[in-house]
Image (cartoon, rainbow over all chains, first blue to last red; front, side):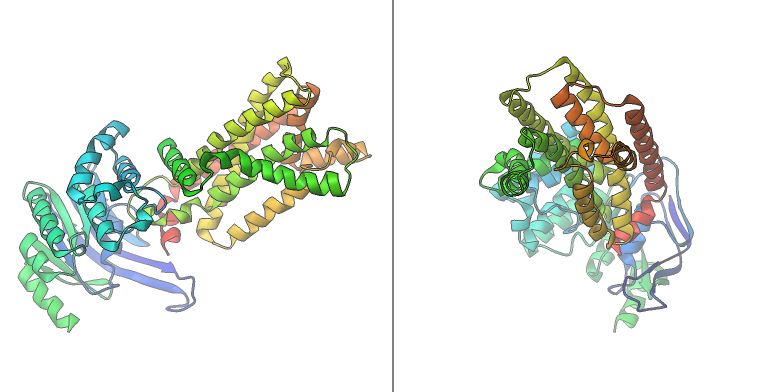
Length: 227
Length: 248
């Protein structure tokens, strides 16, 4: 459904560190996403997990290699925290996010009350996002993301923040979403989540694929390099 | 784009005690400052200096503020850009649209002021329609170029801001390009600086009921449109490169 073929990505850093200013994020990564599966991507901070999702979503282009996507299929990246405009209210941000993900103004408006209720933001939904705590941001981000309907759902750490009660509620909502035939690529730090939710997993290490296959085996490989 | 612009305007208005009043207060205060310096202190010598100044300054602010803000619009939205593959022209266009809403109110204020100062609406004011359209094309073309440059190298933000100050002094905002004494010099300024031509054309229409130089206006329109289309195509083709630059 979606494949990365020998994909590398590097960019010139503003600071002249690394390789004469070139920062190599991914180096020859190949992986495939099959229809209806939930693929987990794990790895330590900075190994290129989020960049991989951005390549899959078409936000970034690889420096070399190919990203192949079946024609007509849409992929959308769900992240939290980033992407909100701090000067706008939670309501406006939710509306904008829905519209940018393809909803018409009417559809986007119809989502808003549901988003307000699920996110438990109450009157804060009308307040500017810059007054939100990180937990509130997480709740708004997750709930807005939950409303998206796309062929491939790319999820970046959306279940890792917020308070414990909301995290459980969010995990349950996400599980019911991915239990159907939804194709999902899921990035997480939390090993238990990857074991619970994913059919298959990939471990990235130093910009390359370290292990790929059954989540339990891949988590074992991750355990060794993260020690 | 329009939704983004209207949301930003509403957010902007709620941020200040005087809210939407700032749409007219800000340009009026700018005009006030220039009036004090060039009329009260330096005695411009023109009987109609305030009208002359308002026709130029209010149009100049529309251009400079839109281009300045639009130039930083892609980098300002890097959070959104890292999340959604969206065409990058959306961000400068949304900022420009904010400016269009503001400028509609500012133009109404200008027309009311002209009426009070003895310049009642005239049939020639219909020439404002093509003038405003060409002005808009200029703003979009310059904003696209500025937004790309700032996204690639942030330092361009400083250059663009400095360029606006340069244009403020060289476009005949507070001096009359037709009063330079040497007709060749006037022609040269109007030919080299499209903004000087535009400010002068607004004054010719509003104060003297005279049509602009259509051939010159058409040249500026075609030049702006060509630039706009070329840069928009480049931005579309290099959307992912711009995203990488915005995020890195």
